[in-house]
Every structure is written in structure tokens, then in C-alpha cells.
Image 1 (cartoon, helix red, strand yellow):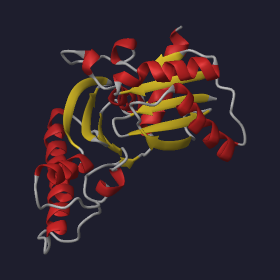
Image 2 (cartoon, helix red, strand yellow):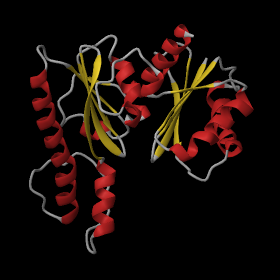
Image 3 (cartoon, rainbow, N blue to C red):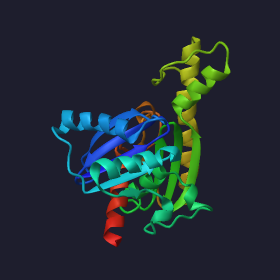
Image 4 (spheres, rainbow, N blue to C red):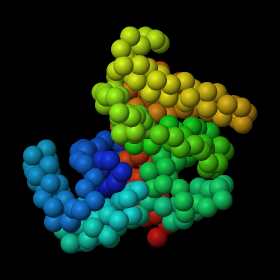
Length: 254
């Protein structure tokens, strides 16, 4: 069994797998003041409830975009599971060529997404809809860069915080293109506006390929965009799959 921590700005996904195909997974809020003991207390309850026990882990993989929590999770893994951490980083792998100016700047979640697709689908676009929305471009098995834009909830919070009268709304797919009240105006602008932006970027990005790339959609807000954004595969577990593949490649090379 391998334990995986995908530490995002808003949520942390805890995953457990023994094959990189099937996952037990749980989400909890990313607490920047949490300790390794508090995180283990939460994780142990989840393990006991769904798995019946705390598994014995052969490996631990961490993909973090919150550097202040890295030491906490490293302590968690070492203290309670007695194993070393594998950190998902572009500079920690030569299996993919990173054709960007500073590979060290690539977020760990994006590195995992690239690993999830690059070996089986060397021409691919990966859209990850979370706190930020990212598009990653994989061409001929190499990473060519991508795009970062505000996530759906990030845009909602920004409007709510920066305006005096606009409400904070829940997000679902609007049926109209013209809103009849303020909440509907916001949903159309954010959800459909973001979808139109993504579809436009995908269309432009496809022009750099000789053959059409596979388009993958993942992330916590992917369900909201599923019917609006062009894609070939919806895979909520894509990042975890990539983390497991990263661990496998590091293990084989050691």
C-alpha cells in the first residue's frame, strides 16, 4: 500500500492505493496551523472507519503547493508510518523533459498531472479545476508549459470580497446566457465565462500539435465544468494516479 497526500491551497486529498488504479480517498481542509499529530488523528479515524485498520505502507508520496506545511507532513510520515517521503517535483525526475524556463516553479500537482498522462498519452492537455485552474501541455511526451487562471470559487470569493453589494453564491451550471437576478448574473459570468475561456485556449493550443491531443479534465470543480468544457476524459483521480506513477519511477531508478 502507498499513502498519498495532495496538499492544495484549499483542500488536502489523502489517498491510499496498492495499484495506482483504485483509490480510497478523503478530502479535508488544508489547515496551515495543523500539526502532524492532529493530521494523524484525522487520518487514523478515516482509515479505521473505511479500511478497518491503519494499513502498513510501503511508500509515501507528497505533492504540495503549500511549502509551509511540507515539514509537518514529512514529520507525520516519519513519526507515524516510519517511512521516507517521495516529493513530487519536476527537478526530482528526469523521466519527462521540462521545456520551461524554471522547472522548479512548476507546482507539484501539475507535475503529477503530467506524469499521469505523458507515458500513455504523449500528446495531451490536462485541465485541473481547483483553487486555480491550470492547463498543462504535453507534446511528444515532453512538458511544454501551460496556463494558470483563477478557479471558480476563487473568482466568486474575489467578487464577494471586493464589492459592497454582490453576494457570495453557490456554483452550478446556469441554464441561461442572460441572468435575471444578481446571483444568476454571477454564475453565468464565472461558470460560463470560464468555460468559454478554457474552450478558446484549448482550441488555440491544439494548433501546436500535428495530431489532436487527448484532453483530460480533473480537479475539485471539474464536475461543474464537465458539460461546458471540451474534453475526452474526466478523471477525478488523475493527480493521485500521477503521484503513484512518480513514486513508481523513482523506485525503479533507485
